[in-house]
Image (cartoon, rainbow, N blue to C red; front, top):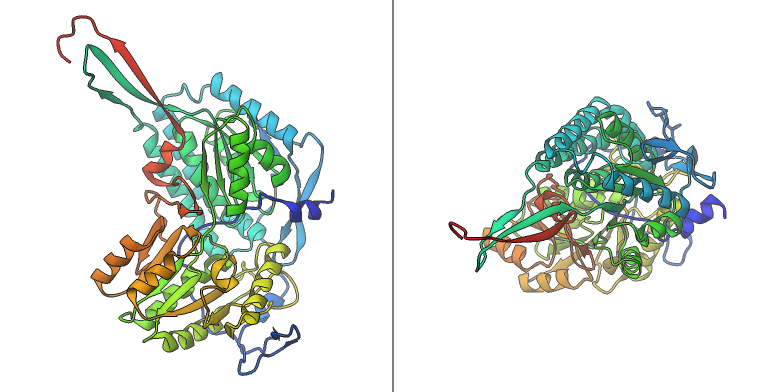
Length: 551
């Protein structure tokens, strides 16, 4: 099967999460943009004249300031070819051209990786090492990440398409911070001594769970690596990690740094490959003790079923979202527009917690829509290596075409296309920042996760109404509230059925803040103290006491 076909067929394509604010930039030159009319023909829609800059997208791509040195599988401390000898291309989303050919792991390679992880856990030094020494290795790893910040960021931008400044100034430093956070936890994980009703000494031990299988997505490869690998290693486990087939490069690079920091062989194994082969093999493996997955809800169901049908391994899932962002009538409209813009368009809209349902009170609705349009028209889209660019390309042609289909659906269902609505330029996977107003709850763009730069603006007039509508979703990952009234904020934060509610802010992801969803947005939490529970087994040890001096 050709690599492109395998990529399109992959059922374990993940999509999710996070980070902080990208820098704003000035207005680009005026350029008319061809849009798709409701009848399917192309042309400028009546009453709409776009001002998106195509210059940045049309220029020759900037040469990335980094070389690709690691393209093989990491198994038992060594970079090795796949058992089949197959490779697949990882693509530059700016152009669709090949960056490098990467070893394609499948079930045979998952077996090799799990065997190495099992041996490292059962016989190796890692679980028997003092927690303090494990902590020191993670701290050295964080130092190396900082030392190689620029190379890591360049790989992430090249392979993923996100703005370089976002990767270099926000995400890579966040990885180092997360690793230091978990390094701090390593020697603070302890059990309890609990009183018994008779002459018994009772210990509650928190033990490493064993071999952890982890599957990470393409939208935040580095951060998802840290969210999963950090707590697993701090607790003394070993890991088999499958990267997303779209973005394998940065995980391989920093895994090399982790071994330079002193990680023993076999403790971390990294497999690049596709969902139906490598992903399914990992999820269903009988010798994997725990599974963690970040990606779409539909794929999460498959992962959960595979885990149950094999050895009933525990599973944590961080899945899709359709997060409401609620703007009350007392809000400063200019500030609300900027925050709502960030909540949706950050990372090209490829965030599972994106504020993709913008609910605006009717008293400020018209003003908000006009100012949201003006802000979208100022958004600079282009080569993510270029200074001042806020939005790079979407990850690949599959996601690019999916977003355009959702835009057509919005037009056909009667929503008002305020701005955007088409591709930008004729090379790469660039999409115009797009806004719909007059969106109704039953529309496809209101119910389904678009995962792209498409803002849907809804009107409401009553607090109880917006609570009901915001909660009327299969998802419950996150929500945003913008208001100056503390009573309104308190009412909404308690009423919204979401794992995270941001008040007058959005996408705040400190290492200690737990993240996860209600309903079909997932099971369990990542980050913070709660993430450690995912990688620990609880054991009660009861010993009889003879003639105890006290109980």
